[in-house]
Image 1 (cartoon, each protein chain N blue to C red):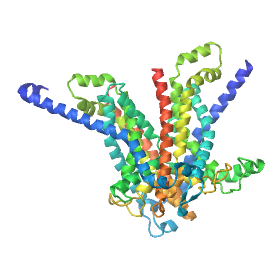
Image 2: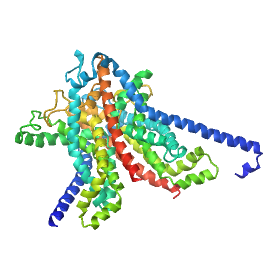
Image 3: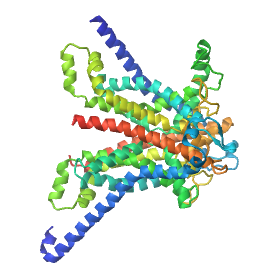
Image 4: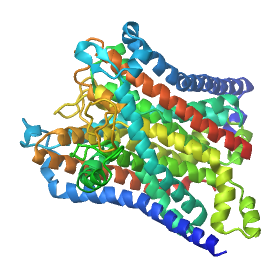
Length: 283
Length: 322
Protein backbone atom coordinates (compact mmCIF):
# COMPACT_ATOMS: atom_id res chain seq x y z
CA UNK A 1 0.00 0.00 0.00
CA UNK A 2 2.75 2.36 0.94
CA UNK A 3 4.71 1.69 -2.23
CA UNK A 4 1.66 2.52 -4.29
CA UNK A 5 1.20 5.80 -2.48
CA UNK A 6 4.85 6.70 -3.01
CA UNK A 7 4.61 5.91 -6.71
CA UNK A 8 1.46 7.99 -6.95
CA UNK A 9 3.16 10.92 -5.32
CA UNK A 10 6.33 10.67 -7.39
CA UNK A 11 4.33 10.79 -10.60
CA UNK A 12 2.16 13.60 -9.33
CA UNK A 13 5.28 15.66 -8.66
CA UNK A 14 6.65 14.76 -12.10
CA UNK A 15 3.41 15.82 -13.77
CA UNK A 16 3.21 19.13 -11.98
CA UNK A 17 6.87 19.67 -12.81
CA UNK A 18 6.39 19.04 -16.54
CA UNK A 19 3.28 21.21 -16.68
CA UNK A 20 5.30 23.89 -14.98
CA UNK A 21 8.02 23.56 -17.64
CA UNK A 22 5.52 23.79 -20.51
CA UNK A 23 3.73 26.81 -19.07
CA UNK A 24 7.03 28.26 -17.87
CA UNK A 25 8.60 28.06 -21.31
CA UNK A 26 5.93 30.38 -22.71
CA UNK A 27 6.52 32.83 -19.86
CA UNK A 28 10.26 32.43 -20.39
CA UNK A 29 9.88 33.32 -24.09
CA UNK A 30 7.75 36.39 -23.35
CA UNK A 31 9.99 37.60 -20.55
CA UNK A 32 13.20 37.26 -22.60
CA UNK A 33 11.68 38.98 -25.64
CA UNK A 34 10.28 41.81 -23.51
CA UNK A 35 13.44 42.30 -21.44
CA UNK A 36 15.69 42.34 -24.49
CA UNK A 37 13.35 44.14 -26.85
CA UNK A 38 11.93 46.91 -24.71
CA UNK A 39 15.17 48.85 -24.08
CA UNK A 40 15.99 48.78 -27.80
CA UNK A 41 12.55 49.87 -28.95
CA UNK A 42 11.92 53.47 -29.92
CA UNK A 43 9.35 55.36 -31.92
CA UNK A 44 11.69 55.95 -34.86
CA UNK A 45 11.83 52.23 -35.48
CA UNK A 46 8.09 52.06 -35.88
CA UNK A 47 7.52 55.05 -38.15
CA UNK A 48 10.57 55.04 -40.43
CA UNK A 49 11.72 52.90 -43.28
CA UNK A 50 15.36 51.79 -43.43
CA UNK A 51 17.63 54.59 -44.60
CA UNK A 52 20.92 53.85 -46.38
CA UNK A 53 23.08 51.46 -44.38
CA UNK A 54 20.38 50.50 -41.90
CA UNK A 55 21.77 47.02 -41.62
CA UNK A 56 25.20 48.45 -40.82
CA UNK A 57 23.81 50.34 -37.85
CA UNK A 58 22.69 53.60 -39.49
CA UNK A 59 19.38 55.47 -39.15
CA UNK A 60 15.97 54.07 -39.93
CA UNK A 61 13.17 51.77 -38.84
CA UNK A 62 11.18 48.74 -39.80
CA UNK A 63 7.93 50.32 -40.95
CA UNK A 64 8.41 48.67 -44.35
CA UNK A 65 8.41 45.25 -42.73
CA UNK A 66 5.49 45.92 -40.38
CA UNK A 67 3.27 47.24 -43.16
CA UNK A 68 4.52 44.60 -45.58
CA UNK A 69 3.61 41.81 -43.20
CA UNK A 70 0.16 43.23 -42.57
CA UNK A 71 -0.62 43.78 -46.25
CA UNK A 72 0.66 40.33 -47.15
CA UNK A 73 -1.19 38.74 -44.24
CA UNK A 74 -4.49 40.41 -45.13
CA UNK A 75 -4.15 39.49 -48.81
CA UNK A 76 -3.34 35.88 -48.02
CA UNK A 77 -6.15 35.65 -45.47
CA UNK A 78 -8.72 36.97 -47.94
CA UNK A 79 -7.56 34.58 -50.65
CA UNK A 80 -7.53 31.61 -48.28
CA UNK A 81 -10.96 32.61 -46.95
CA UNK A 82 -12.40 32.65 -50.45
CA UNK A 83 -11.30 29.05 -50.92
CA UNK A 84 -11.97 27.80 -47.38
CA UNK A 85 -15.55 28.94 -47.02
CA UNK A 86 -16.96 27.18 -50.11
CA UNK A 87 -15.04 24.01 -49.26
CA UNK A 88 -16.31 23.95 -45.70
CA UNK A 89 -19.90 24.77 -46.70
CA UNK A 90 -19.76 21.96 -49.22
CA UNK A 91 -18.52 19.48 -46.63
CA UNK A 92 -21.11 20.45 -44.03
CA UNK A 93 -24.23 21.25 -46.05
CA UNK A 94 -24.11 19.56 -49.41
CA UNK A 95 -22.75 16.20 -48.31
CA UNK A 96 -24.28 13.59 -46.05
CA UNK A 97 -22.89 13.40 -42.56
CA UNK A 98 -20.58 10.45 -43.10
CA UNK A 99 -19.83 10.91 -46.78
CA UNK A 100 -16.57 9.33 -47.97
CA UNK A 101 -15.70 12.44 -49.95
CA UNK A 102 -15.96 14.74 -46.92
CA UNK A 103 -13.85 12.31 -44.99
CA UNK A 104 -11.21 12.36 -47.71
CA UNK A 105 -11.09 16.17 -47.97
CA UNK A 106 -10.74 16.54 -44.20
CA UNK A 107 -7.96 13.97 -44.17
CA UNK A 108 -6.10 15.82 -46.92
CA UNK A 109 -6.52 19.11 -45.10
CA UNK A 110 -5.02 17.57 -41.97
CA UNK A 111 -2.09 16.23 -43.95
CA UNK A 112 -1.57 19.55 -45.73
CA UNK A 113 -1.60 21.27 -42.36
CA UNK A 114 1.40 19.19 -41.31
CA UNK A 115 3.52 20.01 -44.35
CA UNK A 116 6.37 22.35 -43.40
CA UNK A 117 6.19 25.97 -44.49
CA UNK A 118 9.54 25.76 -46.27
CA UNK A 119 7.99 23.22 -48.65
CA UNK A 120 5.17 25.67 -49.36
CA UNK A 121 7.90 28.23 -49.95
CA UNK A 122 9.67 25.99 -52.44
CA UNK A 123 6.37 25.15 -54.15
CA UNK A 124 5.38 28.81 -54.25
CA UNK A 125 8.75 29.60 -55.77
CA UNK A 126 8.07 27.10 -58.54
CA UNK A 127 4.58 28.41 -59.18
CA UNK A 128 6.11 31.87 -59.31
CA UNK A 129 8.64 30.82 -61.96
CA UNK A 130 5.89 28.97 -63.81
CA UNK A 131 3.71 32.08 -63.94
CA UNK A 132 6.70 34.19 -64.91
CA UNK A 133 6.51 36.33 -61.78
CA UNK A 134 9.36 37.86 -59.82
CA UNK A 135 9.64 37.61 -56.07
CA UNK A 136 6.73 39.89 -55.26
CA UNK A 137 3.84 40.70 -52.97
CA UNK A 138 1.54 38.67 -55.22
CA UNK A 139 3.75 35.58 -55.12
CA UNK A 140 4.00 35.94 -51.34
CA UNK A 141 0.22 36.23 -50.99
CA UNK A 142 -0.36 33.13 -53.10
CA UNK A 143 2.19 31.08 -51.14
CA UNK A 144 1.04 32.17 -47.69
CA UNK A 145 -2.61 31.63 -48.61
CA UNK A 146 -1.79 28.03 -49.51
CA UNK A 147 0.05 27.70 -46.21
CA UNK A 148 -2.85 28.95 -44.08
CA UNK A 149 -5.59 27.31 -46.17
CA UNK A 150 -5.59 24.00 -44.22
CA UNK A 151 -5.63 25.55 -40.74
CA UNK A 152 -8.35 28.01 -41.72
CA UNK A 153 -10.55 25.39 -43.38
CA UNK A 154 -10.22 22.92 -40.54
CA UNK A 155 -10.97 25.52 -37.87
CA UNK A 156 -14.05 26.82 -39.71
CA UNK A 157 -15.06 23.21 -40.31
CA UNK A 158 -14.95 22.49 -36.58
CA UNK A 159 -17.12 25.57 -35.99
CA UNK A 160 -19.72 24.53 -38.58
CA UNK A 161 -19.89 21.04 -37.12
CA UNK A 162 -21.09 22.66 -33.91
CA UNK A 163 -24.07 24.36 -35.58
CA UNK A 164 -27.19 22.55 -34.35
CA UNK A 165 -28.75 20.26 -36.90
CA UNK A 166 -32.25 21.59 -36.15
CA UNK A 167 -31.24 25.00 -37.43
CA UNK A 168 -30.45 23.60 -40.87
CA UNK A 169 -33.66 21.58 -40.88
CA UNK A 170 -35.73 24.60 -39.92
CA UNK A 171 -34.20 26.60 -42.73
CA UNK A 172 -34.80 23.83 -45.26
CA UNK A 173 -38.35 23.40 -44.00
CA UNK A 174 -39.03 27.08 -44.74
CA UNK A 175 -38.10 26.38 -48.32
CA UNK A 176 -34.65 27.86 -48.62
CA UNK A 177 -32.05 26.18 -50.76
CA UNK A 178 -28.79 24.90 -49.35
CA UNK A 179 -26.95 27.95 -50.62
CA UNK A 180 -29.37 30.34 -48.95
CA UNK A 181 -29.19 28.32 -45.74
CA UNK A 182 -25.42 28.47 -45.86
CA UNK A 183 -25.17 32.20 -46.48
CA UNK A 184 -28.09 33.51 -44.43
CA UNK A 185 -28.39 31.12 -41.54
CA UNK A 186 -25.26 29.06 -40.98
CA UNK A 187 -22.81 31.84 -41.77
CA UNK A 188 -24.44 34.18 -39.29
CA UNK A 189 -24.73 31.51 -36.64
CA UNK A 190 -21.08 30.50 -37.01
CA UNK A 191 -19.74 34.03 -37.43
CA UNK A 192 -17.88 34.28 -34.09
CA UNK A 193 -16.13 31.00 -34.73
CA UNK A 194 -15.36 31.93 -38.32
CA UNK A 195 -13.85 35.22 -37.18
CA UNK A 196 -11.66 33.45 -34.63
CA UNK A 197 -10.52 30.92 -37.21
CA UNK A 198 -9.74 33.68 -39.69
CA UNK A 199 -7.74 35.63 -37.14
CA UNK A 200 -5.77 32.53 -36.14
CA UNK A 201 -4.96 31.95 -39.78
CA UNK A 202 -3.97 35.60 -40.19
CA UNK A 203 -1.63 35.31 -37.22
CA UNK A 204 -0.09 32.20 -38.71
CA UNK A 205 0.29 34.02 -42.02
CA UNK A 206 2.17 37.01 -40.71
CA UNK A 207 4.38 35.00 -38.39
CA UNK A 208 5.80 32.65 -40.96
CA UNK A 209 9.13 33.42 -42.59
CA UNK A 210 10.20 30.26 -44.38
CA UNK A 211 7.44 30.46 -46.96
CA UNK A 212 8.05 34.08 -47.93
CA UNK A 213 11.83 33.79 -48.07
CA UNK A 214 11.85 32.85 -51.76
CA UNK A 215 8.55 34.27 -52.82
CA UNK A 216 8.04 37.72 -51.32
CA UNK A 217 11.68 38.76 -51.37
CA UNK A 218 12.73 41.74 -49.32
CA UNK A 219 12.88 45.47 -49.87
CA UNK A 220 13.56 48.69 -48.02
CA UNK A 221 10.50 50.37 -49.49
CA UNK A 222 6.92 50.37 -48.32
CA UNK A 223 4.63 47.94 -50.15
CA UNK A 224 3.17 49.76 -53.17
CA UNK A 225 2.68 47.23 -55.92
CA UNK A 226 1.50 43.64 -56.18
CA UNK A 227 4.34 42.92 -58.56
CA UNK A 228 7.19 44.32 -56.47
CA UNK A 229 9.02 42.60 -53.61
CA UNK A 230 7.71 43.24 -50.13
CA UNK A 231 9.43 43.21 -46.74
CA UNK A 232 8.05 41.02 -43.96
CA UNK A 233 8.58 41.35 -40.24
CA UNK A 234 9.87 37.83 -39.48
CA UNK A 235 12.45 38.15 -42.25
CA UNK A 236 13.44 41.61 -41.02
CA UNK A 237 14.10 40.09 -37.58
CA UNK A 238 16.07 37.26 -39.14
CA UNK A 239 18.24 39.59 -41.24
CA UNK A 240 18.90 42.00 -38.38
CA UNK A 241 20.01 39.19 -36.08
CA UNK A 242 22.20 37.84 -38.87
CA UNK A 243 24.37 40.95 -38.96
CA UNK A 244 27.54 41.08 -36.86
CA UNK A 245 26.72 44.53 -35.42
CA UNK A 246 25.39 44.60 -31.84
CA UNK A 247 23.29 47.74 -32.40
CA UNK A 248 21.53 46.15 -35.38
CA UNK A 249 20.96 42.97 -33.38
CA UNK A 250 19.41 45.09 -30.62
CA UNK A 251 16.96 46.39 -33.20
CA UNK A 252 16.29 42.79 -34.15
CA UNK A 253 15.24 42.11 -30.57
CA UNK A 254 13.00 45.18 -30.66
CA UNK A 255 11.45 43.97 -33.92
CA UNK A 256 10.86 40.58 -32.31
CA UNK A 257 9.00 42.39 -29.54
CA UNK A 258 6.86 44.18 -32.13
CA UNK A 259 5.95 40.88 -33.80
CA UNK A 260 5.18 39.26 -30.45
CA UNK A 261 2.91 42.14 -29.47
CA UNK A 262 1.10 41.97 -32.83
CA UNK A 263 0.50 38.23 -32.45
CA UNK A 264 -0.59 38.62 -28.82
CA UNK A 265 -3.05 41.35 -29.74
CA UNK A 266 -4.51 39.22 -32.55
CA UNK A 267 -5.05 36.46 -30.03
CA UNK A 268 -6.73 38.81 -27.55
CA UNK A 269 -8.76 40.48 -30.31
CA UNK A 270 -10.08 37.15 -31.53
CA UNK A 271 -11.28 36.36 -28.02
CA UNK A 272 -13.03 39.73 -27.66
CA UNK A 273 -14.60 39.58 -31.12
CA UNK A 274 -15.89 36.08 -30.63
CA UNK A 275 -17.56 37.23 -27.40
CA UNK A 276 -19.08 40.32 -28.99
CA UNK A 277 -20.59 38.52 -31.95
CA UNK A 278 -22.16 35.75 -29.90
CA UNK A 279 -25.24 37.94 -29.45
CA UNK A 280 -26.45 37.03 -32.97
CA UNK A 281 -26.37 33.37 -32.11
CA UNK A 282 -29.44 31.26 -31.56
CA UNK A 283 -28.77 29.00 -28.66
CA UNK B 1 -43.62 35.46 -48.61
CA UNK B 2 -46.98 37.26 -48.91
CA UNK B 3 -45.84 39.11 -51.97
CA UNK B 4 -44.98 35.91 -53.76
CA UNK B 5 -48.42 34.54 -53.13
CA UNK B 6 -49.93 37.29 -55.31
CA UNK B 7 -47.59 36.67 -58.23
CA UNK B 8 -48.76 34.63 -61.17
CA UNK B 9 -47.61 31.01 -60.97
CA UNK B 10 -45.22 31.22 -63.92
CA UNK B 11 -43.10 33.89 -62.24
CA UNK B 12 -42.97 31.83 -59.07
CA UNK B 13 -41.63 29.00 -61.13
CA UNK B 14 -39.09 31.28 -62.71
CA UNK B 15 -37.91 32.59 -59.38
CA UNK B 16 -37.74 29.09 -57.98
CA UNK B 17 -35.72 28.02 -60.96
CA UNK B 18 -33.12 30.75 -60.63
CA UNK B 19 -32.79 29.94 -56.96
CA UNK B 20 -32.30 26.29 -57.73
CA UNK B 21 -29.93 27.15 -60.53
CA UNK B 22 -27.87 29.27 -58.18
CA UNK B 23 -27.79 26.43 -55.71
CA UNK B 24 -26.71 23.91 -58.32
CA UNK B 25 -24.07 26.27 -59.66
CA UNK B 26 -22.70 26.91 -56.16
CA UNK B 27 -22.56 23.19 -55.59
CA UNK B 28 -20.46 22.67 -58.72
CA UNK B 29 -18.17 25.53 -57.81
CA UNK B 30 -17.69 24.32 -54.26
CA UNK B 31 -16.98 20.84 -55.53
CA UNK B 32 -14.25 22.23 -57.79
CA UNK B 33 -12.70 23.97 -54.77
CA UNK B 34 -12.72 20.67 -52.89
CA UNK B 35 -10.99 19.02 -55.83
CA UNK B 36 -8.38 21.77 -55.67
CA UNK B 37 -7.66 20.84 -52.05
CA UNK B 38 -7.40 17.17 -52.96
CA UNK B 39 -5.07 17.89 -55.85
CA UNK B 40 -2.85 20.33 -53.98
CA UNK B 41 -0.66 17.68 -52.35
CA UNK B 42 -0.25 15.86 -55.66
CA UNK B 43 0.48 19.12 -57.45
CA UNK B 44 3.22 19.86 -54.96
CA UNK B 45 4.78 16.42 -55.32
CA UNK B 46 4.49 16.55 -59.09
CA UNK B 47 5.87 20.08 -59.40
CA UNK B 48 8.82 19.48 -57.13
CA UNK B 49 9.55 16.20 -58.88
CA UNK B 50 9.57 17.92 -62.26
CA UNK B 51 12.05 20.48 -61.03
CA UNK B 52 14.34 17.94 -59.38
CA UNK B 53 14.47 15.75 -62.49
CA UNK B 54 17.69 17.30 -63.86
CA UNK B 55 19.67 16.25 -60.80
CA UNK B 56 18.09 12.79 -60.77
CA UNK B 57 19.08 12.40 -64.41
CA UNK B 58 22.79 12.64 -63.70
CA UNK B 59 22.89 10.96 -60.32
CA UNK B 60 20.87 8.17 -58.77
CA UNK B 61 18.56 8.83 -55.84
CA UNK B 62 20.59 6.41 -53.74
CA UNK B 63 23.73 8.35 -54.49
CA UNK B 64 22.14 11.66 -53.54
CA UNK B 65 20.69 10.35 -50.29
CA UNK B 66 23.62 8.37 -48.95
CA UNK B 67 26.70 10.30 -50.09
CA UNK B 68 27.80 13.10 -47.85
CA UNK B 69 30.01 15.27 -50.08
CA UNK B 70 28.23 18.58 -50.63
CA UNK B 71 30.12 20.75 -53.11
CA UNK B 72 27.66 22.57 -55.33
CA UNK B 73 30.42 24.31 -57.28
CA UNK B 74 32.01 20.93 -58.08
CA UNK B 75 28.62 19.47 -58.93
CA UNK B 76 28.55 17.18 -55.89
CA UNK B 77 25.19 17.15 -54.17
CA UNK B 78 25.23 14.47 -51.47
CA UNK B 79 22.42 15.14 -48.99
CA UNK B 80 23.40 12.48 -46.43
CA UNK B 81 24.87 14.78 -43.79
CA UNK B 82 21.84 17.09 -43.95
CA UNK B 83 19.51 14.14 -43.55
CA UNK B 84 21.57 12.90 -40.60
CA UNK B 85 21.47 16.41 -39.12
CA UNK B 86 17.69 16.48 -39.42
CA UNK B 87 17.33 13.14 -37.67
CA UNK B 88 19.80 14.11 -34.97
CA UNK B 89 18.03 17.36 -34.10
CA UNK B 90 14.56 15.79 -34.31
CA UNK B 91 15.65 12.93 -32.06
CA UNK B 92 16.96 15.33 -29.42
CA UNK B 93 13.77 17.38 -29.58
CA UNK B 94 11.59 14.31 -29.13
CA UNK B 95 13.66 12.94 -26.24
CA UNK B 96 13.01 16.20 -24.44
CA UNK B 97 9.45 16.84 -25.56
CA UNK B 98 7.75 13.44 -25.40
CA UNK B 99 7.99 12.64 -21.66
CA UNK B 100 7.16 16.21 -20.67
CA UNK B 101 4.22 16.36 -23.07
CA UNK B 102 2.77 13.02 -21.98
CA UNK B 103 3.01 13.94 -18.29
CA UNK B 104 1.50 17.37 -18.92
CA UNK B 105 -1.35 15.93 -20.96
CA UNK B 106 -2.12 13.38 -18.23
CA UNK B 107 -2.03 16.13 -15.65
CA UNK B 108 -4.40 18.34 -17.65
CA UNK B 109 -6.94 15.66 -18.45
CA UNK B 110 -6.82 13.45 -15.33
CA UNK B 111 -5.59 15.42 -12.36
CA UNK B 112 -5.99 19.17 -12.79
CA UNK B 113 -9.15 20.86 -11.54
CA UNK B 114 -11.19 22.68 -14.18
CA UNK B 115 -9.87 26.08 -13.13
CA UNK B 116 -6.26 25.11 -13.79
CA UNK B 117 -7.19 23.38 -17.04
CA UNK B 118 -8.91 26.53 -18.27
CA UNK B 119 -5.76 28.45 -17.43
CA UNK B 120 -3.32 26.07 -19.14
CA UNK B 121 -5.13 25.38 -22.40
CA UNK B 122 -5.05 28.93 -23.79
CA UNK B 123 -1.37 29.05 -22.90
CA UNK B 124 -0.71 25.96 -24.97
CA UNK B 125 -2.71 27.49 -27.84
CA UNK B 126 -0.63 30.63 -27.56
CA UNK B 127 2.55 28.57 -27.64
CA UNK B 128 1.36 27.13 -30.95
CA UNK B 129 0.77 30.60 -32.37
CA UNK B 130 4.17 32.14 -31.72
CA UNK B 131 6.24 32.84 -34.81
CA UNK B 132 9.09 30.40 -35.51
CA UNK B 133 11.39 33.40 -35.79
CA UNK B 134 10.46 34.45 -32.27
CA UNK B 135 11.43 30.98 -31.10
CA UNK B 136 14.71 31.51 -32.89
CA UNK B 137 15.29 34.85 -31.19
CA UNK B 138 14.47 33.28 -27.82
CA UNK B 139 16.90 30.48 -28.62
CA UNK B 140 19.67 32.95 -29.39
CA UNK B 141 19.02 35.08 -26.30
CA UNK B 142 18.32 32.38 -23.75
CA UNK B 143 19.20 28.85 -24.83
CA UNK B 144 22.49 29.50 -26.62
CA UNK B 145 24.13 31.02 -23.49
CA UNK B 146 22.59 28.27 -21.35
CA UNK B 147 24.19 25.59 -23.52
CA UNK B 148 27.44 27.49 -23.97
CA UNK B 149 28.04 28.50 -20.34
CA UNK B 150 26.50 25.67 -18.36
CA UNK B 151 25.48 22.49 -20.14
CA UNK B 152 28.39 22.23 -22.58
CA UNK B 153 31.35 22.86 -20.22
CA UNK B 154 29.80 20.69 -17.56
CA UNK B 155 28.74 17.66 -19.61
CA UNK B 156 31.53 17.76 -22.15
CA UNK B 157 34.22 17.66 -19.44
CA UNK B 158 32.53 15.32 -17.01
CA UNK B 159 31.48 12.87 -19.70
CA UNK B 160 34.05 13.16 -22.50
CA UNK B 161 32.62 10.44 -24.75
CA UNK B 162 29.78 9.99 -27.24
CA UNK B 163 27.44 11.84 -27.44
CA UNK B 164 28.80 14.59 -25.21
CA UNK B 165 32.42 15.18 -26.26
CA UNK B 166 32.74 18.20 -28.52
CA UNK B 167 34.99 21.13 -29.33
CA UNK B 168 32.24 23.51 -30.38
CA UNK B 169 32.18 26.24 -27.73
CA UNK B 170 29.77 28.65 -29.43
CA UNK B 171 26.54 27.32 -27.94
CA UNK B 172 24.97 27.10 -31.41
CA UNK B 173 24.49 23.36 -31.46
CA UNK B 174 22.21 20.42 -32.15
CA UNK B 175 21.15 20.40 -28.51
CA UNK B 176 20.18 24.09 -28.64
CA UNK B 177 18.03 23.40 -31.69
CA UNK B 178 16.62 20.33 -29.96
CA UNK B 179 15.55 22.33 -26.90
CA UNK B 180 13.92 25.07 -28.99
CA UNK B 181 12.20 22.50 -31.21
CA UNK B 182 10.96 20.62 -28.15
CA UNK B 183 9.12 23.72 -26.95
CA UNK B 184 7.75 24.22 -30.46
CA UNK B 185 6.26 20.71 -30.63
CA UNK B 186 4.79 20.77 -27.10
CA UNK B 187 1.43 22.18 -28.29
CA UNK B 188 0.70 19.62 -30.98
CA UNK B 189 1.75 16.61 -28.89
CA UNK B 190 -0.04 17.78 -25.75
CA UNK B 191 -3.28 18.76 -27.47
CA UNK B 192 -3.50 15.50 -29.44
CA UNK B 193 -2.77 13.32 -26.39
CA UNK B 194 -5.23 15.29 -24.31
CA UNK B 195 -7.90 14.79 -26.94
CA UNK B 196 -7.16 11.06 -27.06
CA UNK B 197 -7.30 10.72 -23.28
CA UNK B 198 -10.69 12.37 -23.32
CA UNK B 199 -12.05 9.68 -25.66
CA UNK B 200 -11.17 6.95 -23.14
CA UNK B 201 -14.54 6.01 -21.62
CA UNK B 202 -15.10 7.17 -18.08
CA UNK B 203 -16.45 3.77 -17.01
CA UNK B 204 -13.03 2.20 -17.44
CA UNK B 205 -11.58 4.57 -14.87
CA UNK B 206 -14.44 3.95 -12.48
CA UNK B 207 -14.06 0.20 -12.79
CA UNK B 208 -10.35 0.41 -12.05
CA UNK B 209 -10.83 2.76 -9.10
CA UNK B 210 -13.56 0.54 -7.73
CA UNK B 211 -11.14 -2.37 -7.72
CA UNK B 212 -8.98 -0.39 -5.31
CA UNK B 213 -6.37 0.93 -7.72
CA UNK B 214 -4.84 4.30 -6.97
CA UNK B 215 -5.37 7.12 -9.45
CA UNK B 216 -1.91 6.68 -10.95
CA UNK B 217 -2.39 2.92 -11.25
CA UNK B 218 -5.65 3.57 -13.05
CA UNK B 219 -3.90 5.90 -15.44
CA UNK B 220 -0.95 3.58 -15.94
CA UNK B 221 -2.76 0.27 -16.37
CA UNK B 222 -6.01 1.26 -18.03
CA UNK B 223 -6.12 4.79 -19.45
CA UNK B 224 -2.65 4.82 -20.97
CA UNK B 225 -3.05 1.31 -22.32
CA UNK B 226 -6.27 2.29 -24.03
CA UNK B 227 -4.74 5.51 -25.31
CA UNK B 228 -1.46 4.02 -26.54
CA UNK B 229 -2.16 4.19 -30.30
CA UNK B 230 -3.27 7.79 -29.90
CA UNK B 231 -0.13 8.70 -28.01
CA UNK B 232 1.97 7.12 -30.75
CA UNK B 233 0.03 9.16 -33.30
CA UNK B 234 0.70 12.33 -31.29
CA UNK B 235 4.42 11.56 -31.22
CA UNK B 236 4.45 10.94 -34.97
CA UNK B 237 2.73 14.27 -35.60
CA UNK B 238 5.19 16.03 -33.31
CA UNK B 239 8.04 14.32 -35.09
CA UNK B 240 6.92 15.53 -38.49
CA UNK B 241 6.50 19.06 -37.12
CA UNK B 242 10.05 19.02 -35.77
CA UNK B 243 11.29 17.50 -38.99
CA UNK B 244 10.21 20.39 -41.16
CA UNK B 245 10.78 23.32 -38.83
CA UNK B 246 13.05 25.75 -40.60
CA UNK B 247 13.69 29.25 -39.32
CA UNK B 248 14.17 28.56 -35.61
CA UNK B 249 16.58 25.73 -36.36
CA UNK B 250 18.40 27.81 -38.94
CA UNK B 251 18.95 30.48 -36.29
CA UNK B 252 20.26 28.31 -33.45
CA UNK B 253 21.71 25.08 -34.84
CA UNK B 254 24.94 26.63 -36.08
CA UNK B 255 24.38 25.23 -39.56
CA UNK B 256 27.97 24.40 -40.24
CA UNK B 257 28.87 21.48 -42.45
CA UNK B 258 31.16 18.75 -41.12
CA UNK B 259 29.79 15.34 -41.96
CA UNK B 260 27.69 13.32 -39.57
CA UNK B 261 26.98 14.74 -36.12
CA UNK B 262 29.12 13.14 -33.42
CA UNK B 263 27.94 15.04 -30.38
CA UNK B 264 24.88 16.84 -29.11
CA UNK B 265 27.10 19.90 -28.73
CA UNK B 266 28.29 19.89 -32.34
CA UNK B 267 26.63 22.11 -34.88
CA UNK B 268 23.93 20.53 -37.01
CA UNK B 269 22.75 21.42 -40.50
CA UNK B 270 19.26 20.01 -41.10
CA UNK B 271 17.58 19.75 -44.49
CA UNK B 272 15.05 22.60 -44.11
CA UNK B 273 17.83 24.96 -43.04
CA UNK B 274 19.75 24.02 -46.18
CA UNK B 275 16.77 24.92 -48.35
CA UNK B 276 16.28 28.25 -46.60
CA UNK B 277 19.96 29.11 -46.71
CA UNK B 278 20.31 28.79 -50.44
CA UNK B 279 17.79 31.43 -51.43
CA UNK B 280 20.45 33.83 -52.67
CA UNK B 281 22.79 31.65 -54.64
CA UNK B 282 20.38 29.01 -55.82
CA UNK B 283 20.02 30.16 -59.39
CA UNK B 284 23.67 30.97 -59.98
CA UNK B 285 25.16 27.46 -59.88
CA UNK B 286 23.97 24.81 -62.35
CA UNK B 287 21.81 22.05 -60.87
CA UNK B 288 21.90 23.73 -57.46
CA UNK B 289 18.21 24.66 -57.58
CA UNK B 290 17.37 21.17 -58.72
CA UNK B 291 19.20 19.61 -55.75
CA UNK B 292 17.56 22.00 -53.31
CA UNK B 293 14.09 21.32 -54.70
CA UNK B 294 14.83 17.62 -54.43
CA UNK B 295 15.52 18.25 -50.74
CA UNK B 296 12.15 20.00 -50.51
CA UNK B 297 10.48 17.06 -52.26
CA UNK B 298 12.09 14.69 -49.79
CA UNK B 299 10.84 16.78 -46.89
CA UNK B 300 7.35 16.93 -48.40
CA UNK B 301 7.12 13.17 -48.95
CA UNK B 302 8.44 12.29 -45.49
CA UNK B 303 6.23 14.75 -43.59
CA UNK B 304 3.18 13.85 -45.69
CA UNK B 305 3.68 10.15 -44.94
CA UNK B 306 4.16 10.82 -41.22
CA UNK B 307 1.04 12.96 -41.16
CA UNK B 308 -1.01 10.38 -43.04
CA UNK B 309 0.11 7.77 -40.53
CA UNK B 310 -0.61 9.97 -37.51
CA UNK B 311 -4.01 11.23 -38.66
CA UNK B 312 -4.84 7.76 -39.93
CA UNK B 313 -4.33 6.29 -36.46
CA UNK B 314 -6.40 9.06 -34.90
CA UNK B 315 -9.25 8.57 -37.38
CA UNK B 316 -9.20 4.87 -36.68
CA UNK B 317 -9.56 5.54 -32.95
CA UNK B 318 -12.36 8.02 -33.53
CA UNK B 319 -14.28 5.49 -35.62
CA UNK B 320 -13.84 2.73 -33.07
CA UNK B 321 -15.17 4.95 -30.34
CA UNK B 322 -18.25 5.83 -32.31
